[in-house]
Length: 513
Image 1 (cartoon, helix red, strand yellow):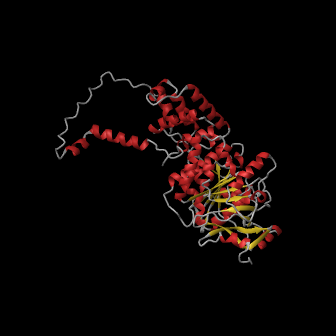
Image 2: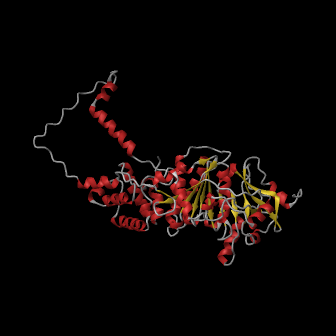
Image 3: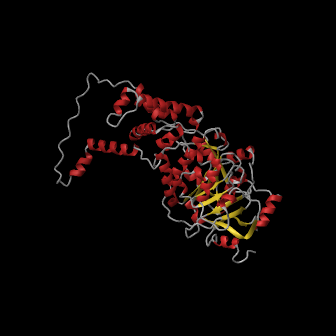
């Protein structure tokens, strides 16, 4: 039992929670964990976002698993990127062994192996999960520029291309649609279409088309298309537990720009789709952004500003976001400042760059009289972390060297056969497995090119006579009379059709539904 006024009890007092909370582990002082000094993360503060960081092999993945399990048990759906393919164990009950039993005993944890509801998804075909897609139109010019590696000038041109297609209601469903629009806008007819709002130079169009070809060669064309993922399929419950969505991305490790940007698209879609909720007792969804440094690498200033804005605003939709990476310095300061929960596993300090990163990391934590943080961060054992979170009153908790609980699900993969069986039995597989190729920009532009020019009939009848003058405006029947006019009715139909076709775009240039 913790002594009153002991360092462990003093630290643990900052983690006392009146509402529901995740049980992360226990406070460690002088190398020993105190089971009575619990470290908790209040569910009500999870939409203030968080960070899980640490060097390879220090236990980050197990921490993600531990948090995901407890969120699922509380009925909160979770989205996880399974980059290495070792999180599928969430679907199976864990088995006890000497290490697990010892960890449970020293932390006072009533550990029992438990399985959680999991659905497996993959980007496009070729992955282990049910294939999911986004349309080019939905993805938008900002995110697509990040995937294609375009500079700011080229991104601006791509934005103009999307604007033209949006105004004309031309659906860009896949890469061939975008290619056909770019080709059209560099033709003589296309240049006339853009008169007054700019143009697409042949050189810039060539760069974009080459980048698009590279993406297609890497399998990117399998990702873009229909049916498009409905983000509400990520927010499910099963027997009161939140469903864990695992994005199986081990087949895309060589395409980091694609999967990291896709995760940002998912977040942007959630922001656009979900209603305002304000502060909730627990989040509606928690989203884990694994390998987060890939998102920020070579990102433009505008792209970074949009990420910062999304992270700030999405908390009001009841969504919590955790960034997972090796170093806190991988995250831009304006984003890092929005992350209320910090779970920092061990860091290495072998090189001058490592030492500089360590010094910067120490400065991101509140001051503590109990630990020398620069020493502690290089001395943490596997499954231990330096933790500080936001309390329920919104203040940072004391820094706690924490020995984390062991996950209750299987720590490792359940195997490809088990994943395949789970996918085959999922209703999402039936929903998303078959590709749809409906009429879109490619077909419409091809038909326009192929259609012969209309010829006037030799004995064409004269044009109809102009309608009779409308009654004066002060005549009570003026509006009724005008609305019966075929010309007015035709105009109204055209205007309504144009309004229905034109696409509006959100924070990241992604389509607003």
